[in-house]
Length: 224
Image: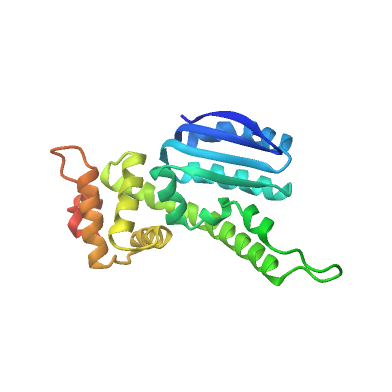
């Protein structure tokens, strides 16, 4: 499970985390909430040593971000490894954890008595839209992972790896792939290319010598 260390940095706090960001990492949220409240401007996360991150870990980060926004503060990811980078990029929420202070510091101040630039409102609306989208897509991604776990006897980590690998190899956004995968339960069919890549990813995630089986005993390559 994830553990962390905290160091004050001016009006912010730097949080260094290592381990795995999964469902168990939610136990850290109460302490992170306390640190956020005590900070003047928010938290800076260093996630280089996180070796695994799934939707539950992302959910914890988004909850922390949501709490920070409510307090007029921010949560930024100052550095991260491959595991966190994949999740942030595939779900499209990286910008929520990007520090915008340097741009604000270099921008000229508006003349006294003028209205704030329209870009500020647009940026805020875009951030809210991204957050809502992530909140809406996480249940679908988790459901798709559950389908893979049940259909192919995969561990949660292996099912997540199958989703990520298939998403990358088919150039499909993760939430779109998850939506299509959930749709197969209602009788829809995955595109042939996606079926091939999904079968290959499942085969790679299986134990040596174990042939992956699709629903009702069907071979993986025939699973729609």
